[in-house]
Structure formats: C-alpha cells, structure tokens
Length: 82
Image 1 (cartoon, rainbow, N blue to C red):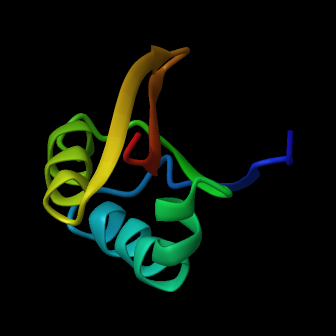
Image 2: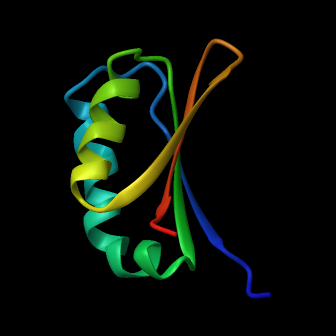
C-alpha cells in the first residue's frame, strides 16, 4: 500500500480568515493529489472558527474532513472523497 503524504499546517495563534487562506493555498496547490488519495492536509489550530470555515470550504471543494479536539486546540484532517 503506497504511503500517503501528509502536509502539516500548524497555524496556532492565527485567526480566520488567515487560517482559511493558508489552508486554501495548500488545497489548491495539492488538490489533485488529495483527491487521488495520495496526499492529506492536517491543520492544527487553536481558532475555533477555523473548525467551521475550513471543513465547510473543503467540503464545497469536494474533499472530506475530520475535526478532532487536541490539547489546547483542534486537528482538522482534509482528505479525498472515498
């Protein structure tokens, strides 16, 4: 089974819309690889608003998302549709 490339984005300390914009940059750059399942984007943030804006936007772009609570923040995983 091929390895999945993980693109980690640690944006703790930043607030939306910069959280969304930084994530969008990676989604646009790596969209085909994410859709193919060979790449995932993992965002770590402490901005609660980002847990709504990033998944909603990623969903509109055709990606799956998974949000989990971690330490003093959130982990948002963006991956291809299955």
